[in-house]
Every structure is written in structure tokens, then in C-alpha cells.
View 1 (spheres, rainbow, N blue to C red):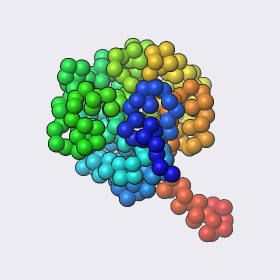
View 2: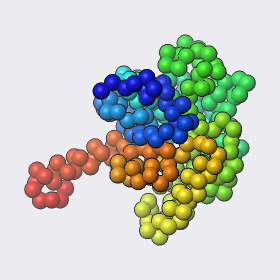
View 3: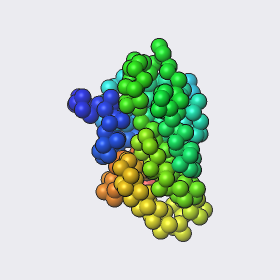
Length: 264
């Protein structure tokens, strides 16, 4: 099935800002052939993990090439840290947006927005004849309109400054990292029932704050069922699991089936 122009990669930033329901997939492995396969399945976006995945900067561009080869999903890169230089490098690969981890204040959020925008709205350097020019154009204002800035809410400090972060001019979305947020709320491990109620309360706070300020709100989840649940609760986009997780899960399931024991 072909993707219509109104739902193709070029419309990702506009659809995100319009708070349409979007479903993504997470790539942690430096495996362009695998990424290309997944990018043809119909996810709205493919998130490439430049923070915790095994893809370092040379792998970011290979991943974007793989995503774009199918013409169905938008490529998004999570940069390693709130670093304007890393943001510029990621966007120069032709990524349709960046996810910035560990943003803890409105001041940081403003700096991240400016790193995604050219003068006069920001500090991003015009890339010239690099891959981004092919994908998103060469006119600064038009490039800025086609690229999304997404910051993560995953620390106690971010929760403390949540309203001001969500009110940041030019910010397109906030995105929950539930593992780090759980730890910030006292969990000893991700999924610790002792922090479950605090996490759910924080998620409500985040979705409501995003809604009040008219920006998109996303979350990383472990499976498709959880994505549907979170979208029904008020999140506007959700990213499903990861290639490395599913590779292990499916391999274990086949091993169990082959042994006929029900145990991997």
C-alpha cells in the first residue's frame, strides 16, 4: 500500500504539530538492511537511538537512508544529550526531527528549539549541499517548518518545570522516557510496582500540560497494546519497543517452540 502525500514522511512535522495520532518504532541496532525492512511496514515514524543504541554518528545517516528508501516513514533521531552540535549533525542527515533527552528546564528547552531553527529564530547553521538539502530543502524558513523539535520529560527537575517547558515557544512536543522517569520517582527498576502510582500520576500531569499548551505529547512503550492504551489516555504519539528487543523475543519464542518445552 502506498503512502498518500498527506501522510508521508514530508508531512511528519505538520501532523505532529496538529496532534494527530502517530505510531512509531524504535531502532537501536546499526543494521540498515533491517531498518529498511521495518521502515516499509507503515509506521508513521522510525526513531533512531543515538543515545543508548549502538548507532554512532556515521550510523545515523545510514539509518536515515534506509528509512527514506521506503518512502513511508519519517526518520527521527534521538541525540545523545542536550547538545546543539549533535542536533545540527542529526538534522544534517535529513532527519525529520530530533528527540532530545534529559531536558530539565524551560531554559534548556528554549536552547534546543533554537538549535533546530535557523536565524533569526535560532542558531542552526545552514547545512548547504548535504543530505538534508535533498530531503527538506535549502530555504531556512521552509526547513524549519519541516523539522520537529521534541524534548524528553524524564527527570524530577523536568517535572518541576513542566508547565514552563510545555509553554516554550517553538517546541513541537514533549516525550516521556518512562524508565528514567520511573527512577526519578523512586523506582528501583523499570516496572517496580512501588512507583507505579506515582508514574501514572506523572503521565496524567504531562499529557494535561501538553494539551493546555497545544503541543504534542509522546511516550515510549513496550508493545502495540500499550501504545493503543496510552493513545487512548491522551498521548498523541507512541513509539513501540525496539528492533533489538524484538529480535531477542522472537528468537527465544522460536527456540522454545523448537524444544517443545515452553521455556527458552
